[in-house]
Length: 133
Image 1 (cartoon, one colour):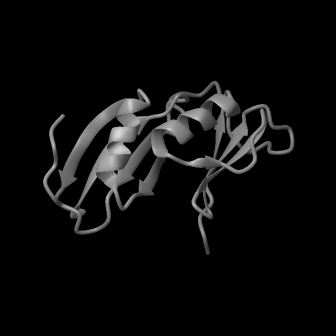
Image 2 (cartoon, helix red, strand yellow):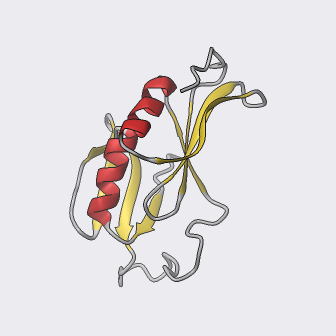
């Protein structure tokens, strides 16, 4: 089984641009209603506009915060590069790049334009020096 998460967003094109700029994902579909974002040849995330009549179970955009209890977690072999990319993109940083000693890796936490929490983590055992910016 391969996870292929899909989140509902207010502006698919703007969210797609954010994920491409902040995380380096690539568009494989594009459009105002639906987007597929790829990491290489792997589907990493799907975006769907809230006004999706064919998907009545996406949720309610009026309830806040969006995705309460859900974290979009991405693993990246070059977490330093990913963190620099997110900063250059102007992403809202909730937690800067730091060592998570329990997980034995480095990670950083972001908030996307719709309010979803996004984490980018290094590989297990990636507890190298963290450059404080």
